[in-house]
Length: 217
Image (cartoon, rainbow, N blue to C red; front, side):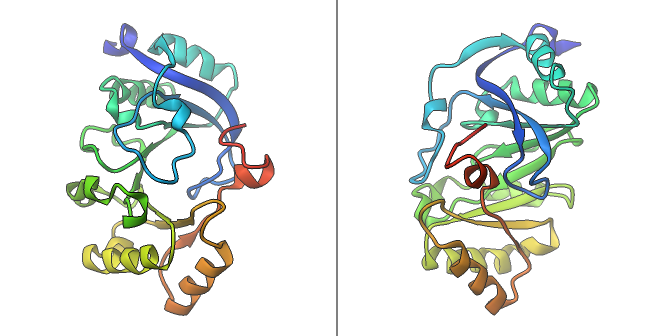
């Protein structure tokens, strides 16, 4: 297998409940890769920008197996910024896990293993990184994938609605909307979604509710 000798920079591997996406609440192993080309205004994982430890894919698989999980999420930082992320995703799928990838949407997702659920951010103006969106990715999405908007304010919500209509996103895959934690009020976002009968799933970050604003647990 080509991934036997591949290595990646890993910030952390931990076991917790999935706090977001349609798999919210499910016990999951998280593999957080180091590094990210984006600098979103609301980023809560700045500690993953640098540092980390170099690990081989067999070592990573060994650590994951200790938890006997059904679900594994590869996240960051921006996991696709490391080219060997693609081999890691393949290895996890080959090991029989249900795998999801959390990506910021600025890098090409075309080569991601088809068995992986790709959770792709669309960066809003409030993120400060709207210019980095790789719009070509949207044509690659399938019903197996998910799109996520993190919203800072009413302007972000209006912008996201426009993007949903322009790209017919609800017809491609499930669409998630999240308020920035400690920023946009979740109840306010819920009321906008209901008012507009928007075909999206409202999500809050469950792990931050359960563990007092913790990024991972």
